[in-house]
Image (cartoon, rainbow, N blue to C red):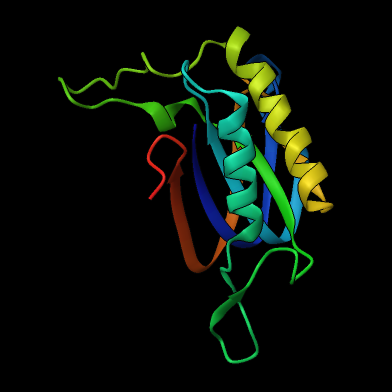
Length: 158
């Protein structure tokens, strides 16, 4: 399981409506002061990956204190989460120019893990968790605060 975390001053996800109806869409989730989490699930992931990632994300001290140093967790600043499914985090660009997504879990595997990740994050953090729609055409807008962007892979626990 991979996540790309961005500390944001605001972020939102809009679910695109059908192209035939003129595009546009409606805001499905919106946060201020928190973390945008792009979540990629692979076929070999397990519940242990979710538990480890959620604990790690909730404990990260990546929010500034009064001295401008990253000493606070998301709970310390009463932040929020926006979680977006992102299978392209498992892109392999080893061969050719077209990325391969062979390691990305198919929807029948990925959707239950995506939902479990969200439930676990809500339970462990007790903070607001907004979400996208798995498999939908989404437009994500954000203001990256810092910028602070962190990549975490549960299979490579550095």
